[in-house]
Amino acid sequence: MSIGFEFNRTRSLSHALDVLVDEARALGFDAVDYGFMPCARDGNGVWNAPDIQSRNFPPRWSTGWKRYSSQDPFLRRCYERNLPLDWNEVKGAPWLTDIQHEAIGYIENLGFLDGVSIPIHLSGQSFAFVSGLSHAPCGRWRDEPTRTVQDLFVLAHAFHAAVIQHVHIAADTGGAPVLTRRETEMLKLAAIGMNAPATARAIHRSVETVRRQRKSAMQKLNAHTIAQAVARAMSLGLLERPANPE
View 1 (cartoon, rainbow, N blue to C red):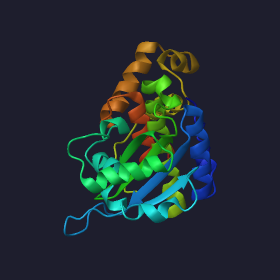
View 2: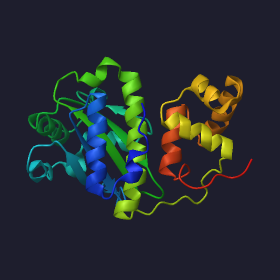
View 3: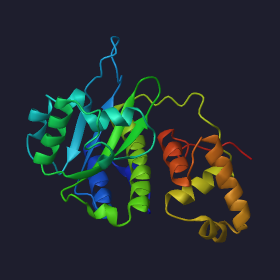
């Protein structure tokens, strides 16, 4: 996947959403939504409802959704994890309440029968998510699910990093890991779709050197995959400012 840092050139939240839905369609999704909460829970432990922005949803869909917003079973599940959530993991789960079953039915009545949500945990209790939705019970994205979900993960974090600028969400990078110039270069090349051999050819280094630098960056970012490392670096703004000299 090559996102080409398109989000960096967006002029508003609306423009960024337009780019997001275009990229998501290329991955096999029919629609997207994005939600953000400055505080996921209030002082009494009650879950807050997110402010949701969407693309390719039916008109006035959010009016009926207000009843379910704070009970969204997909969102509740996202709070508990860092990795992408396949909606099939939630549908039919024994822990679903009656109103959560209704919420799933409401989403299906909108015409969305399949989807993936990407949780984005932020500083404090802030939380965001991006979802890719499909009309078919088995969306086109399932043709190559592992690659597609990995690409959506990177896309979601790149989108949120841009949104921080447009809607003035506080980006707390205090305590963020410090990457060397070479580690930053590895992640920037990975972000545009270059694997380790291609990166080695581009910078005239051995594949082993590239893999070592990528592994170092992943460890600093507490990431299990290079895609996850790119996403976290983007969300922290580490690919936009000068890196620490080696």
